[in-house]
Length: 364
Ligand code: F0G
Image (tube, rainbow, N blue to C red):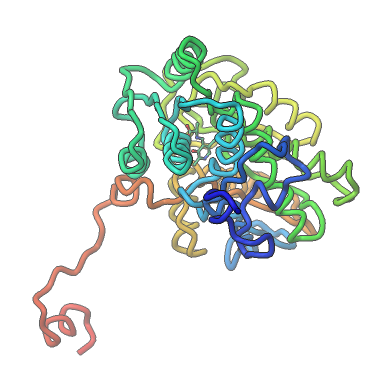
């Protein structure tokens, strides 16, 4: 007889087998690892309709990691980290977060019957992300402090109280997240020339590079992309070469002053011949709006940093002719309604009356 958890798993040829089943042979799974699946991975690679011509590349794609079950790329790594925590017999997971990691940890913990403790900087995480942690029943510890302080505390507490720490300092997170690079190669048939990606705690750029290197080594791609990482100017420790005490940016997801995977990000940059650079909040918000209005892609502000980086490099003379470029849209714009509504929206508030509507809209 099949166990309850096995019965609920879709067949391998289902359109959404999940990251664990789809990339099983590339992940550190054992017979005892539960094959959790909330439908993560297999996210769309959408061709640009407008920005492609502006930046002058051969093809520009957006990898919509916002289409993961909790609306961000975190689910790819979280499914591995939580499955391994279950396998190890852990009872609870813990993370520090600017929002998305906590939402993802809360969801996968709920799915698995584990408790979730999330440590977040009070008042600094987007409303939708907090709502997710609340909805999934996580225990939320909102500290008067930064993400960097939250991570330091989460590391200490999880060790002391034997919780599984599911931040990207947990190597299983990186293992899961590298599968996004596999998907890009699987879909394009080759690695792109450039990958533009936002950088916060720097786990994701580290994971993508690991994925591209592994696929290249296996002969699944002939080339490896240049990794182009972008931090927010007010939170750009890697660009500055020193931690930032009080990081500031509208892109709250990447408001991080001392990234845990700093070395991994530098290795990705140096080994790939890429860059880690900064973009201003104005550039981030401009790219965020253009992405939504010219491409139909509603990413969150942090994801705008990747697109802002592309626009900045192209305007600065980077020759992209003949090149294939992928921008990683790391999270959904729905998570941060406050930023979306920050400029007062142009609402036509009218009576429920045809003539009044036609009059106001100038259709008469
Ligand atoms: N984009 C989004 C939407 C994020 O939530 C994050 C990180 C990043 C980019 C940067 O990725 O940290 O791997 O360099 N969010 C973490 C969190 C820190 O707690 O949700 P990174």
